[in-house]
Length: 148
Image 1 (cartoon, rainbow, N blue to C red):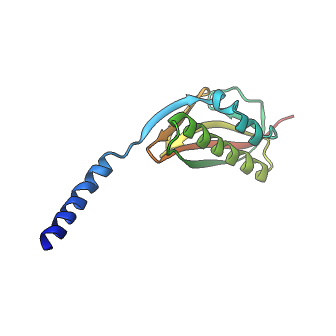
Image 2 (image 1 turned 60 degrees about the vertical axis):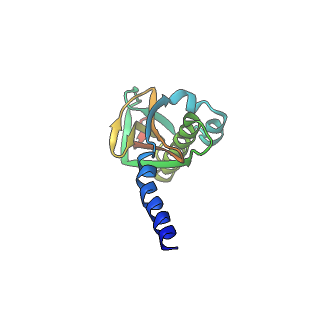
């Protein structure tokens, strides 16, 4: 019996490092326009807040209110990385929209990907990290009131 228990313990301890080594964290860059043009994005982003990604020309800013960061994760199990990443991106954008409304901002400017505090600036792509179980998108932006 002791031999059996020792065998099981040896198997468990040897399996743990393999499982950790097999963990996936794939970095992707996906098109912002595709994610913003989905039916879900059209339903959830109501147009009351304008979004400007890093590198895009913005209208004149009247008042800068504050900066903020989002960090959204979603279940990636049994989904393509793109589908999971687009969903996490949309969740991050909804969070930016909700925070802007709370602050009475009418725009979020200089939006950039900010995964693990590492900036990725693009006006055409967002960064997402996907694994076997989760996908995540972090965004950073400035909440502002635009000049009329």
